Amino acid sequence: MTLLLIGVALLVAWPLYNVALVFYTARDSVYAARHRRRAARRGDTGLGATAPGDTRRGDLGPSAGHEPGVFWIVVPCLNEERVIGRTARNALALRGPAGTRTRVLVVDDGSDDGTPDVIAAIEDPNLRVLRRTLPNARKGKGEALNAAYRYIRQQTADDGDDPARVAVGVIDGDGRGSANMLVNVSDAMRDPEVGAVQCRVRIHNRDRILAAVQDMEFACIANASQLMRNSLGTVGLGGNGQFTRLSALALLGDAPWSSCLVEDLELGLRLHLAGVRIRYTAQAAVTQQGLVDVRRLLRQRTRWAQGNLQCIRYVPKLYRAAHISNAAMVEMLYYLLAPWLNAVGTVVMTAVTGYSLWHLADGPTIHSRLQLLATVAVWLAAMVAPFLTWGVLHRLQLRDEKLRRCLLAGLCYPAFLLLGLVSTYRAIGRQLTRRNAWAKTERLAEATNPT
Image 1 (cartoon, rainbow, N blue to C red):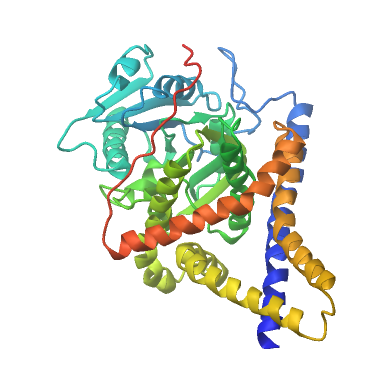
Image 2: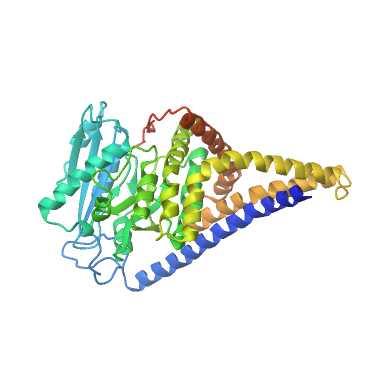
């Protein structure tokens, strides 16, 4: 009977967890709608696109004196000839509030394809290129970002800028920032205690169903999790679309990013331990390529899961950190231990669920095969219903995909989770055998690469 009750509890817990996430994302949608209405009444777009001589600060109001005056957008790249042209031009087009400056630093980490030629063809005074050559190049994204940090630190000193008012953003080689990105980051950094901001992540090649599922993962489910972490103070950095004050990075020494396979996760943990507040904005977004090949997807997710495992060494430090609340501690520990919990929890849940179904079938509560089938149907519905809910929310919130396609992505999501479970087991195997090679995600050719 105890195992039966545990099985029922697990059955109920999963939908309730998703209900909690839906609550946070719905609340944020209400806030965003009010925000847009207030901006509309002021005749302000909030996109930061100001005409020459226009002194408006988007919809931010008077300066609080803590917002960034300079934005550096770092684009690390290695053999990105298929996508780097569009990414660099998009970054150069981004504008912050009036009076701010935007610089784009492309870090060519030893490319041997046409990447250097594509970058050289872009003529813009705000573009900087940092070329790394072997043996220093190709040591992982973290090392490329550290080189960019040291370059920006020196430039900031030469220009006499305040490091606390310099924001360093990271957009991957396949990334595209939304037009309002820098304005929203500036808004979040009006609070001097906010040292980093993570933007929403989306997938721009979601015409394939596997990529559409990834868009639901990032734009809806991960978005809701980040909104919940906002209230707990445990927001994590996602690598793509992250902005950090230069002064906050300086707290971490000469190399803020590590050689961890998920360098952004470790950066976020180190910032939290240093007492730096990280915020999340769902109103600004960065898009990236989704993976449409299962093999490459497994390789990417294996690297991510292994990066989580590598960061478990921070558990004792988090436990001893007096400035981190108990609720925040639990959330961080859950996130770090997720690969292990997934690996063990799936086995336990499968065993308990199987036992519960067998007990029901063999017990006095099930009197016919029809009742057993009905019980199984209820269980499957409870497991699948949350994903269909996310499909509906995707349509209502983002409004850029048809409802039937969103529902199809929701139905496919359980299979997507199984791929994640396979990646978790592979990551554990790699970690136990000490295989830590950094595998770069290969880009897809894009239809256009506009000038």
